Length: 242
Image (cartoon, rainbow, N blue to C red; front, side, top):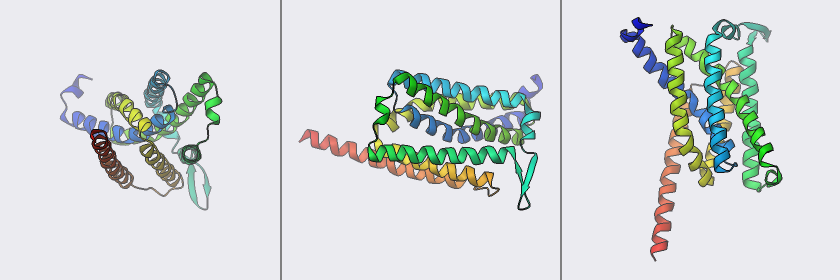
């Protein structure tokens, strides 16, 4: 353990893996932010804490179950000559879940479906937490398999995961508030979820889509939306002055 503190290669691996875990966590933050946007502020904060706490717990638990986790990449059966693993099935299921959830949220936002307003807050809270748990499990598997491929020491993996989840927690509040108060941004975030869902399905089917393309599209669209939000604020400020 102490040898790692003086090993420059260990620090380089930690920095690289931390950045990678933060990037992979963007999907998780966006999904949680959209889910909790319909809850009261106090409930939303608790849901975010539970969601990110579970994300950390799942990742650390998977790290200690390395042997079992690597078994997820073992072939279960073949389809048209292509091997199918548990990881493929999890990614396929997760991608379909994101597509269905994203489509339902877009429908609710456009059609103004208020059926959820009649649901008790506690019941809605429980459903949202359950959905967060499902997506945490999906993203945790993909995240930890990436970590295993990039670092050799479990101490480095755990440290990187803890730092990444801490950054996700700090970012989740501002992201949630921004999405909650800007409907067009929420629609953009839902479009990102659909894109991520397609990417997960493609990965599960054996067609890897480089995440750099997806994250570049997300960053560019977010930058354009930020400019639009600032322009609307300035326009409202000028109208109020006159």
